[in-house]
Length: 244
Image (cartoon, rainbow, N blue to C red):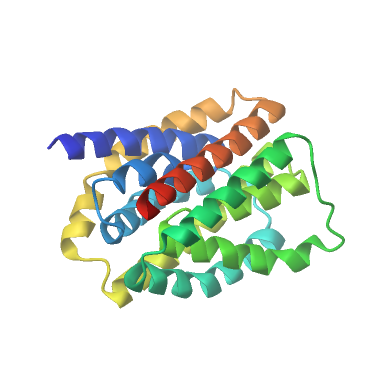
């Protein structure tokens, strides 16, 4: 009972974060829950609960979404998801997770310092960025960093950032859910468990959408990159503890 109450609180806060910034539910939910529950329970439950969040928020910002960005990202994400789901089902990779966490921290800190890497052809990077995000989403439920870092590097506006990222996460979340069903990871028990979390997610999402209207562009960028750095640090520490 205590773990379920903790889970409700985590999903409520995760809804606030994702509704406000366009990503981040996994930052709040996945690391602490993975201390108590297996990844094969946490990842599909998180995917189900976050679909309501991303779908609701993406619909409210649909006029800012750009098909030329979301479409290629989604195609790349579809290609990366099966490999990620396969690793989730067959492998326990703390070394891989530690490497991902370290890379996230380094890139986030670089961007926070003002570093940018101008791309001659940003559209050519959309497919590989989507692939990396889909792979991470399927394997460790944390698909945000590649998308966040890419869009931040492009310098898109706050509303475009949130609309494009949310549309992408809604689409790939739905595809991941299908993959979990086909692979047998998603059971009836996990589905009911996730359904009970939806009210907390919905309330958090509405609070996050309201909060987002009060944030300036610079504050928004600092929060998003700070969240990526924290997420990477948590993932790195957890993986190193597992290795030890």
